[in-house]
Length: 391
Image (cartoon, rainbow, N blue to C red):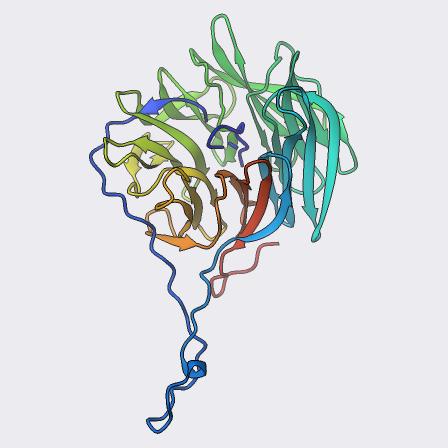
């Protein structure tokens, strides 16, 4: 589960890359079919009345859960709710951090009177442990919630900035940091039980760090980083990270990864945006990479750029399409990575900030911008027959 630094498109990678793209026909996502009320048809002797006609129902989709008057920059879903974090106050001055939490159907708000100077990240697996980081005038601050209160956690020796933050199964967190002279990106893991840091390796010659976060797999930890002037899937079981499965090389047409997930197969799907030649404009980036073999293949790439996404427990993918082109904007759901998209009800407002789903869950939480504030929405995918519910 990753939590990227909030970016103009939002957590999760603010790294430029490019791939030569053939002209693609942009197809809007299909509209979900309407269903009727199931009333019996009138007999021939009866006039067809308005009450006897089939009335369409609304398409499945997102439902607003909460609206706030400040910009939320990061969200992290749990099995029973969601955490969000943002900044309050005047954007021209250091601001307080505001944390919202939904637990057992009730919302609570905590305002941390700090002096944050930039984007905030939050990452949590459950209600009892959460991690938060934000920049200040003197470097990054890292906080941990232990079930009762927030407390500061000292950064590893020699680390002053945190570029990415991810929670770890079983407790703890991983951070990424950029070091200059010579430039390289380092990764560290924190054991919440023994309260200590472990150096997890580095990527040389990059300014991007691990800005897309980290995910644990059976074979080690996976991330996406800029390796030798290209975005690549990188893996590590401790020690230096190895570049695997090149996502795309830099070229004359810009592209970037906005989100990524590890599939049940162990493959990594990278999602984002490509720039197509006029008049097509931006199209989505969808590439599946096998980290162990470095083999890659394209998945569906004929829609609007993907601003944010969430992988659900049934293997389906929920995405927020770019709001730059209203004809192709909106929420969609893909039953599998290679399946067609189906439109979901819900408004992107001024743009999607983040989508988040807890591991194995069928519920996804979306944060969208409203101009001066934010709206939190939720959507639960239909349970497949024979599938146990996530708890």
